[in-house]
Image 1 (cartoon, rainbow, N blue to C red):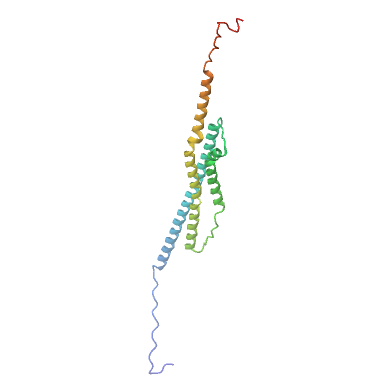
Image 2 (image 1 turned 120 degrees about the vertical axis):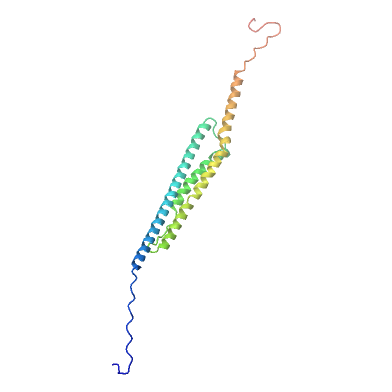
Length: 199
């Protein structure tokens, strides 16, 4: 007990008034965070769709180029034929490049590394999404380069493979027909004015 000469006890601290805007600020922060997440998801989905569409277009263009080249090869070289290993190699360069483009796209899609997505950590999830996008973009580099090289080889080999053999065959056929159309000279008469029939 306090004696008659002791000091009185200090009064209890006054309660701190609650911030009436704390709940509103917290809710606004949650809304901003959810909006950022949705925008990030939309950007990632759009990028993945774009990469997927580009990959499909690249595969389709490569298939069309391959089919067109084979059809032209059959049409132009059906009569002249292909002679020699070197000529076969030159003819098949675009085909090999386009087939390699299609095969590389398939192999890279199958052998793409697995990425573990951390759901509870937003920053780690964004980093994982970034790694996935970079891997998807890298999968388009090799097929695109091989398709472009095949197109360049097709343009470079168009005259040697398609035009020149056709011209050579046409020139040879024209020379043969001109020789067959030349009239033959009649046999010369024997001296004495007699022929084999008069005898």
